Length: 335
Ligand SMILES: Nc1nc2c(c(=O)[nH]1)N[C@H]1C(S)=C(S)[C@@H](COP(=O)(O)O)O[C@H]1N2
Ligand SMILES: [Mo]
Image 1: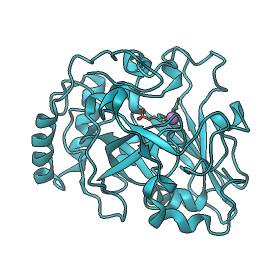
Image 2: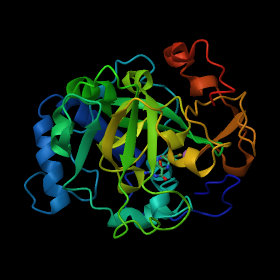
Image 3: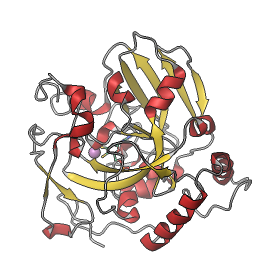
Image 4: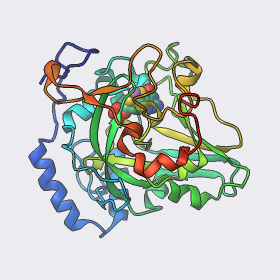
């Protein structure tokens, strides 16, 4: 299938074992029936699968593990009825610069990422800092499926069913101090497994940040899976953030540290090009990137080169849910 945008006029490689949509939908229906029975099974199955110890269900590929799919989200704005981007497109057209700068590179290269064991360090202005094992994070809150529009700064978008829970659940658990005003996400930078770490494209590790009220917003998702399965490596396994009303680069992948701070943290793209990428980076059709318009977008998978572009919506369509976070702020200044 041709995925076309101004970035690529070629066929992307097709990963050998992509679940056809029909299989996924059937499986998802089954998972819905099974949902609620045992998150613990999913955890042991996952760890077993990743390590090859085989304790859990047989795993054909990262992601085939059971019970990650939660119930459909009840969070307002957490589910859109738009047509899903195909699993194939969502897992073969990625930005994950640690594995290369071409959209096809992460799917090709990220198999080297070792996702188990995995620890997320919680640091800074917080009452309960510490090293949190992925298994503990998984069990912290019931997981839901959220279907989010994801809009990338380069002018393309996807609709992806993510699986996870509101980051707010973790934040409440670790009890930030009153002085904590921002959250910084630090991601893995491992030269041994990530071929582009060490290149000068970005200042590694890739970091991102949110203001505390943004981080606490129920739509900000601590994400472990997609399409009812464990995250593929190229999509930020084993744990990432998804912030649907902001440009894609705010959604940091493969997170190893969450730090609470009283100062606005630097972010990877802001450090790389201060005048092009601001801290907030809310999707906004009225605020152009210095080198291109942000008024329209191409939905990946929609009709290739001849597809009509869509008008980009303020806050990526989540204005009703998040607009109040920015009342009184000049969005051109705080871009
Ligand atoms: N660690 C890390 N996280 C990252 C990136 C990256 O290069 N490194 N790219 C970002 C960008 S630009 C986008 S658009 C999204 C893409 O997420 P997806 O591949 O799951 O669609 O991941 C974001 N998170
Ligand atoms: Mo992006």
